Length: 207
Image (cartoon, helix red, strand yellow):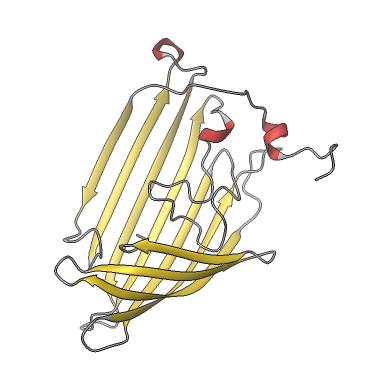
């Protein structure tokens, strides 16, 4: 990269180190019977975070994270699952340190945005949507497959507006690792724009 190129890191501003500390307030609803391999049900998690200088934080700032998921049998009466995921992160006040901002794969288990490397995109606010179709391949449930599509959008550093949608898509294979907990060994291949692609592995479903 040329020495005179200004990255988003440069434009946003950064310090060599920073501390973010403060309380969080959480509201959680989990109607899933199995979080490892969810069957029809709903999930919602809201987290309000505030970082305060009086508690040791370098900056005063606050954010809101909204994580929503829904699972349905499709077609009705089958064991196939159509899953939906919405993950959104908004800065409500102040200026979080650059590495505290939401980014690709910045969710708890680093699964957000298959098709792109972790940290590929970052911004002050994030809107993320994903849908995945999970279907059986063998009658005994040992082997199954998935098709997925997602999109992520971050606010621009220059104007704090959502201007670009970054799509991702792909397919994957599932191998039953434990039939009692219904844990799958997951291997996916995802694609993004500008030639982005790669292999993504999990033990348990992505969401």
